Length: 202
Ligand code: FES
Image (cartoon, rainbow, N blue to C red; front, top):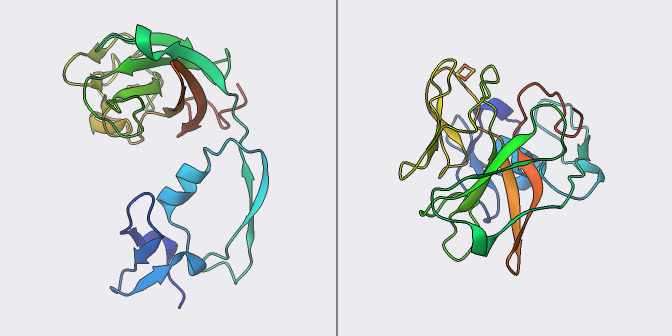
């Protein structure tokens, strides 16, 4: 059955098999659709190359080619040195324009959080609205970044940087983290850094 992709609503957990519900209430499986969420998470893969996506509804049954980004695996800190509510700055995925980022132990479990408490997360700190600098706007205990000094946008760091209030419409780009012993590595990004058309080109 053909579906309008914009009408697909994801009803699966992140690691469950993909099952979606269409606007008319029927369901479809991964074999004939790709959810927006799954595509975004997939774009953070660290393997370079080109893969073929299943044919999307409305695309005449043609398979699509998608380029997978190749992010650097970069040491950004150590678990034992992080303190709750004390952000540490770094740059990622390079030292170019708008790459300023921070890692913070929130003290509360968070989406994408690593460590025994699943509370260590990292984000690019440029506001997604118009690039307001927010590296020093973390609010302890509330686990938010903001308000942005330009137009007051505030982002929830426990929920993948989703916008809480303000003018921004996109979540903060979240830096994917990997724990290797006590060392913490950045391995990718979810979302687009403000001012870039490609996270890997500054
Ligand atoms: S630049 Fe941050 S809210 Fe506008």
